[in-house]
Image 1 (cartoon, rainbow, N blue to C red):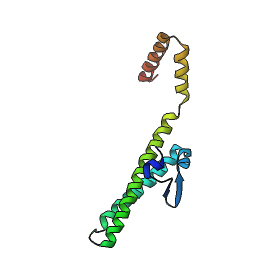
Image 2: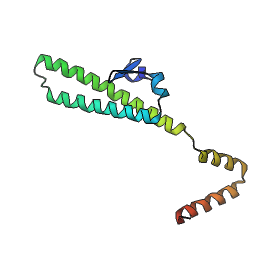
Image 3: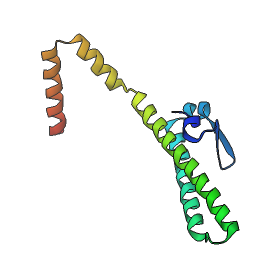
Image 4: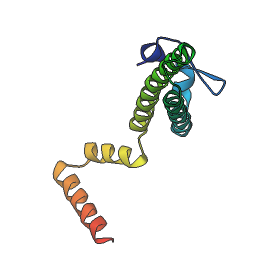
Length: 127
């Protein structure tokens, strides 16, 4: 998925800051989480604004339509940011993950399973 897929645009703007796909993919999980909070706050603000504007007046009806469109864009970008966060988290392997892979490849299966069982029992016992 890309921004183009999400909102049919190459850039996303929030709080006078522009983001491209390249910018978003470079961001750390913490930065993406911060952006996610900003987007969520904007969606909530747009929803509240739409509730407070009566749609029987032609001016406010047009305003509400623009707010609906902005909320739609922000919701789609939020989905995209969530996918990026999930992707980055799943790509980061820890030292333990590498250790398990190497141990599983090097040790005989029975020995690996025995060590893993003993480690799990020790963890449950708090040893």
